[in-house]
Length: 394
Length: 191
Image (cartoon, rainbow over all chains, first blue to last red; front, side, top):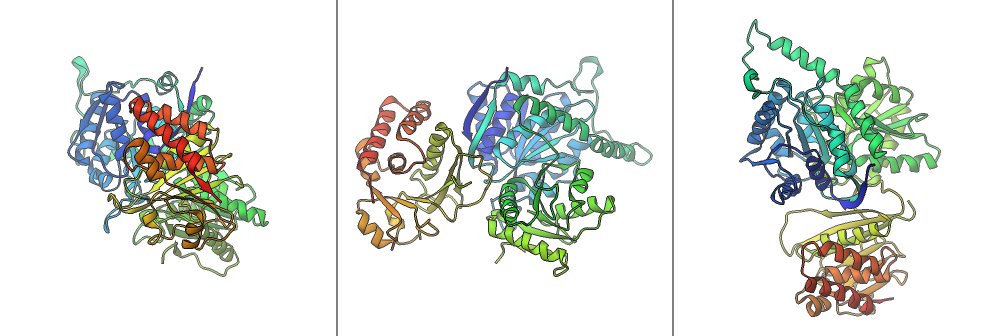
């Protein structure tokens, strides 16, 4: 019988607990704000003998991912964590992890990228890695950061998936805020996550193998990349299965997208991560005034749930798509581009506006969200165009 | 959401305001509430003004942003009063608790607070020096706040202190903290 402890904990604490309960074999990490307290907490578990993890205090994030790749290829269960400049410092290794089909679980404390230097929360770091072949989850709360991280192990290591998974949580807002959380007992989590059964590990007695070999012209490079896309495209049902299995234990629902008052909504806001609750509060205010507002939150960002997103949005009169990072030179930010692509695929033409918000940890005020909802009502009436704009800038 | 209480803490880095914001939240959690406690991080320099926030509610808390219209403001360092607008956005029927040796009328006049705002004063630094042996006003301030507000109970606070501090401090230190809470609850003046 599952046994739950209610506690006040930060997102970083909860992810460290998830790593501990998953009995990670190897955890190479380099501390960086706002991820620091996560790996600090984990190193304390190691020092206290509560885990038997090989904790590798590497000298950079490039090495953190390199060590993760080596350990994972050898057959170990591997986790790591980073943020911001750390994630982009890993960049070439991210593609090697996914190309070698290594089920590494990495937490990312979503943070702004320099320059100018800024340690606060936005999605610029994770969005830069959105097409690197990793499955990517966004948490809204500390609780969800824990849930997503446990789900990540089960998905990553599934024999029909074998892809790295990034479990992301917003810097400071989720990493450092204490919230009411539920921690499952160790035994239940251990049984849920299971043990890793490595496929063709480097070290396997007489049948030792090599990974990441040369595949040149006339070789198999193109085919490997084609297979890699097929793998991430085919991962949806395994992600849902892992989420459903966790829901059966925890009672907390797992959906690729979470909808709030969207069924009959005229005006829908699309958002990721910790700002979704603010959006729901504003949507509820508008509902009380008779305006049919709704909120669609994306929890699974890669692979992008195109069909589900289009299905929810198809009846709206206009849509506000919120981006906590920019895709410089593109028409919209990353989420804006994906959502529009989802609509186009289904032949749906609905006017949208793309809002860049909360960069560098800028506070996401309810007034700013009210403004976005007000503007998309004007958009639906043809009084505003579909251009990209900003919320809360001076 | 009408039962949501939003608390903003003002202090200087190193006075334990972030710990206080979390201690109050954990106490409320112990009382069966939903909670949020978070710092507003900037460059970390001891002595620099900082803000922290606590939310307490009977229902799950949806919002995740800074608190700009608090119903309670707590000030751990009275030297902030001339340089930070600590009452900014405070609810007209709210409460402001200050660690000071000044009296309620003096504070009300200094901050131009309307009569509808409850003003509470406690010499938490003095109590801390007496009981803990150093000017660490956070625990007695939380004790005073639990006493003058409905957000948490003094009994629950003391239980949490025993649970949390029991993991890392000696019995003498725990006892001194419990005494500081009792004294702050007795000595706080609220009008």
